[in-house]
Image (tube, rainbow, N blue to C red):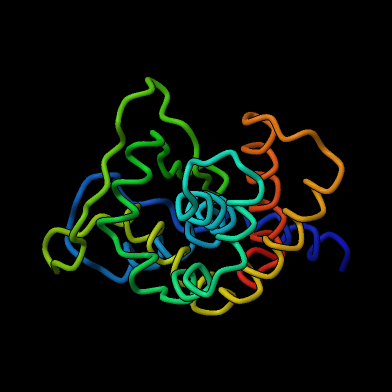
Length: 194
């Protein structure tokens, strides 16, 4: 019995369907399924970058605190359709040079491109004939997080940011690091990231 359970446990990871080709292709059940599967693995990282991109590049703690606490910021995160619009996501992840990497073990990650070149993302990924499953993975991950947990991301981000800046010097580099840490913590608490 123990051997069967062990083998079935191994099969959960290694028996996953292989990843489809990276290229654009017809929108199929296989490609949609691959996008959803990859989206589960990259959701937290997508969330972190989307939250940080919604904040201005200011390094003033008081300014950031006001923005984080503002109704506009809450509404922005809560508007998943706009926040997770594919054109916006494509622009963001191209600028950051982050790509969806489908790993042989059936998992996926969002990582820097190997050559530090701009990755491909389809900005309008609605066609039945020209569908990019990796772009869909990013969009799906973003939509799932912000449709379900925008309010909790916001409150956790605000709470974590306040905790981090409470007794830390406010040099620009440190504030950016604190924002990143706050975003990681906030996004890690969402239902889709657990």
